[in-house]
Amino acid sequence: MKKIAYALGALLGLISTTAGAWGNHTLAAYRALEAMPEVANAAPVTVETLESFLKAEEKTIEALLASHEAWAAANLQSYPPRPSKLAFVANPNRSDEARRLAFTHALRIAPNSRFALFIQPDPKLNASPAPRLASETVTTLPMLGNASQKFQPIKVGDTVAPLVVAASAADEPDYGLDINLFEDSPSEWGKMYGFGTLPFGNPLLVYGSQAPFHMGFMHENQVLYTAAPFIKRTFPQLRVYQYSTLASLAFRTGHPYWGWRFTGLALHYIQDLTQPYHASLSPGDSTLKLLAVNAMAMAGLSGMKNDMVTLLSNRHLALEKYQSEVLLNSALAKQDTPIDQALRQTDKDASYPEWHDLYLRNVVAAQAASYGNRIAQTLVDSIPPGFVSDPNYDFGANEERVTLVKELVNVPTEAKLRLDALVAELLANFGAHSRNAVRGILKASNR
Image (cartoon, rainbow, N blue to C red):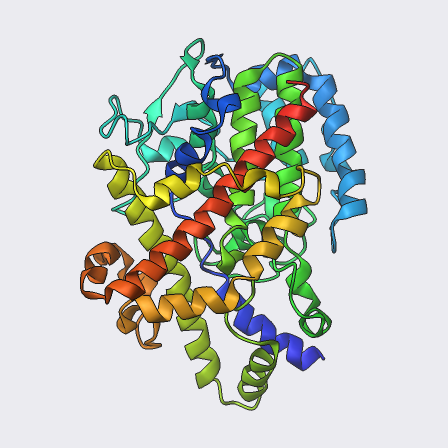
């Protein structure tokens, strides 16, 4: 079993360096939430700093963060307890900086997380916001040259629409909050957080170490869990619970700006798990194939394993890039495509259970994992083979030079329609689960 686990670990470490899910979450979040009266019609909220919220509610935050440990121990598989020294303890005499640091330590997120006061304006309404806010003010991570994120500063005392706050924050966990949190990470905080070594991903790659917080392989065959139990060490459920309960606390205590901001943070992880390549180890591949490929790699024949890893990464990135291009193009053109409409489609919301603590695992991840065969086959049939069927091509290395919308112009119409229909279906799930989570947070807030 150790040999199989080692081989699976090598495979997983390569697959999971692709930590993106839906590109810029803000674009899709605007479309998903603008159809929800509880968000779209909510009164504007007054901007305040994180430090102001923490200082005002220090005792209630202490109690809430303490309760997180009991919940996580009871509900999460392979949960590593938070070291007791990291508990958030109220202390009115400390500085704002010290209180903020204690908060990030208690959540076990990167203490250099910006938590800047910013928004991403909806490009459908404002394609070129001014003034601009430099990306390094908002994120600790580098951004691609063709990134769609456009940041605008806001300041204490401004009033902002809840839709804007939540949609902007829905992309924020990709700005460095979950980077270098493991003991083998090149950071001081990773060595004290208690998460152990990085279960998969590459700690040397800038985004690699966030993968276990943004992916969740919760519905694999038991054989894989037995052979490689480390694939259970994923933490999106933890993040959703932390941020959703913080959102409810902020609403209840009169801090609606941070209520909506934490809501957006929680939504990010839910939305990530609607992506089949984040909810399944190897969409379209059977457990038998995975074990066979790893057996060959163990025997020194690693070619098939390397090819599988490359193709999985390429298909993951191609799906994300195509969806992102379609949404951004429609927003800039002030158009309303079937994919935009799917995000706003509310008639499926009530077909799912009411939001509960294990909704992410039992509903979102289970549904996404079920798309494995269909998503793999659709991508192969619909996207030019050089991008998704050639193991000698590295999509990630060439991503900035690829415009998939243009590349698909010559694809047979039927194949293109199947791809668009599947993307629309996946984003309808994205929208429905996002709205159900918001309803759950608001209900817990007595709003």
